[in-house]
Length: 138
Image 1 (cartoon, helix red, strand yellow):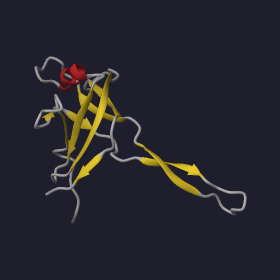
Image 2 (cartoon, rainbow, N blue to C red):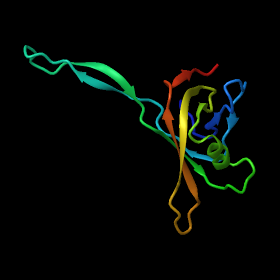
Image 3 (cartoon, rainbow, N blue to C red):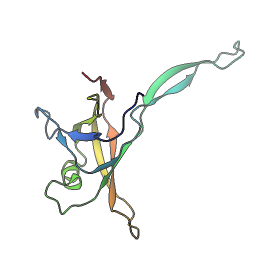
């Protein structure tokens, strides 16, 4: 049977462009879809009997990742991302099989709603500044 569990999916960032490795952000709970849809450009002519389209710009939208919130930890995801909020950084999402998705983005943080008997979370919304590059597992 083929397939993988989501156990071990992680996201990391480079603190600078010169950094050789990615620093993992702990307590990741949810990732977005990592792909985009090309917008359709209507090129239908009056002589056409059906609409005709060409592919336009690919739109990923914002990539929203959900993390557990705990800013009391020294290296909490919230603290690390808050320190780079508004800055363009390089990020990598790693899959359990070794494949990865890399992209440049500007992050914005938003606290999740607090409810009775639920964990506190926050959402990190990544506004893409590059295409998402896929690297296959070795």
